[in-house]
Structures are given as structure tokens and as C-alpha cells.
Image 1 (tube, rainbow, N blue to C red):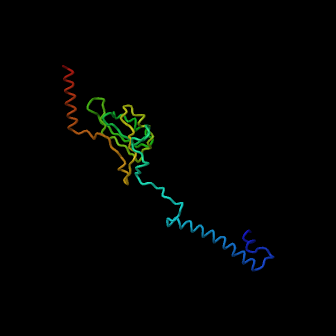
Image 2: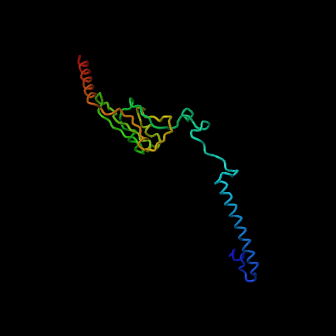
Image 3: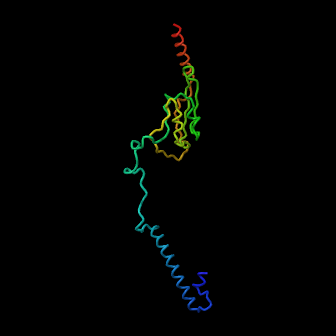
Length: 186
């Protein structure tokens, strides 16, 4: 309706007044289009005054944090002290992302487990800390490392296990148990 009035939609307008209204509307719209294109082209060809570079290089030596500057309760990648780990599996049981896989075998002493495999898939980890809280021997902790990138998802997995028990190790443990039993009998 607005355009009809501007273009001479009323019955008393003459041809020349309609033509004049058309060119006024065309000039107004053309000026708006010109300002829009001018603004866009200035950004495209980097001539805009208000355009400033906001992207920082990585790592920026002035604003990036080192692991020592992180807050005390920050959560980095998970690490496991395999010598303290008992292989109980509580961490894997409570993990909501199921990023911890654990495999155990009978150890050198009766009732002691050998943690042959302890893998953490950091591509699945939520860094929630529930597994760290559930770890009774406190072998599982958050490190201060938080930067890691890879194009391969498998490279984001970390293994902490001791490896499978070899035949030689089983024989050595058997001999140690027999020697301990003989010492206990004497």
C-alpha cells in the first residue's frame, strides 16, 4: 500500500508526479544499497577503519597460561601411577563416559592383582573428576597438562598398563612364593 501511494496509486496523480516518485524511491533504495556494498567491500579488501585484528597467535607468550599458572583445582589429562594402582576397577565403573578400560591378571602374591592394561581414551573423557574421587589408592590423578591435539583419534588414547604377564615372570613368581613358604616353615 505504501509503494502504491509513492508510485501514484491515488487517482488524482499525473504521469509526471508518478515518474518523479518512482525516481525518488529508486534513488533512496540505491543509496542504501550503495552504503551496504561499500561497507562489505571495505571489510573484504581490509580498508575498514574499525576492522582490527582480534585473532591471537597460538601460543601467545603474553596471554597464554603455563601449567604452573593454572588454578589449583584445574583438571588436565588423567594420569595413573601404575605402581600404586590395585586394579580394583572402581574408576572404570563410575566413569560416565566409559573412557577407562582395565584388564587385570593374578599377581605375584595371592590376592594381589597385576594391572596388565590400563587405557584412558581422552577423546571420550569429560574431565569430570569422578574417577579420581573413586580411586581409593589415589593412583589416578589429573595432570597439569591440558593441551593436546591430533588428527588421529587413536592418538588421544594413553596406556598405563604394565603389559601381559610373560611365562618367565610366572615362573619367577612361583619360585619366589616357594622360597617364601620355605622361609616361613623354618
